Amino acid sequence: MRILVVEDDRLLGDGIRAALQKAGETADWVTSAEDAWHTLQLEHFDCLLLDLGLPGMGGLEMLRKLRRNGNDLPVLILTARDAIEDRIAGLDAGADDYLLKPFDLSELKARLRAVTRRYKGYSDTLLTLGELQIDAQAQSVKYRGQSVTLSRREYGLLQTLAENAGRILSRDRLEETLYGWGSEVESNTLEVHIHHLRKKLDPSLIRTVRGVGYMIDKAE
Image 1 (cartoon, rainbow, N blue to C red):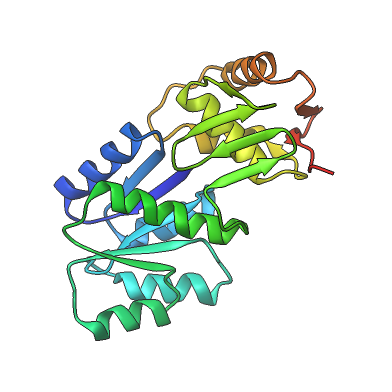
Image 2 (cartoon, rainbow, N blue to C red):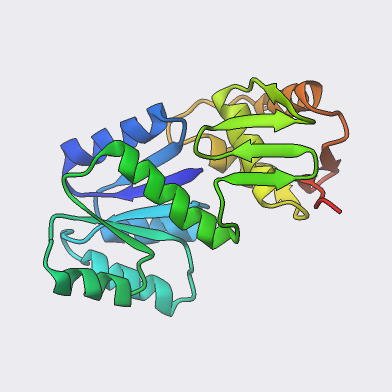
């Protein structure tokens, strides 16, 4: 999962980004709504962590702008504002959930899983696709009833393909999901991960659509 963190407190923003990356997610961080808006026009993210008290354009203003423009990206508000009116305003503006500062990282991760699950259309932490089972909470995988050990990026790649079963995902989209800003990505890195997944699971599980990208077929 790739997450964009919008937080003007540099210590907190960098800490959230680092903690999410350590937990196996891909996270990037900006300090203003203007930078976030520009970034979202250019790159794909699975979720937005949005502070309300931002300089310039406020978090609520940005959220309303996103929804007016038809962007349905899951948004989790992070804020120190604990008044019920502020929570209602955030939810009415289009937020999917609301988390008060200070917060525990495990709760943040659970709420991220919940909002992205709802957005992608499944209610359980366990994603089953034929003989493939992915447990988003435990970040574990079983295939044909057997546990499969994957690296962090192999897991992230498999999860993204499985959540989008039946859709072709481009190379650029998959690389954006796996690597945050500043990461060195060699030209054949994605192909290496695909090769490892096919070897550990099944050579036919992930299909190459030449000139377009990769996909996993929907289970019949």
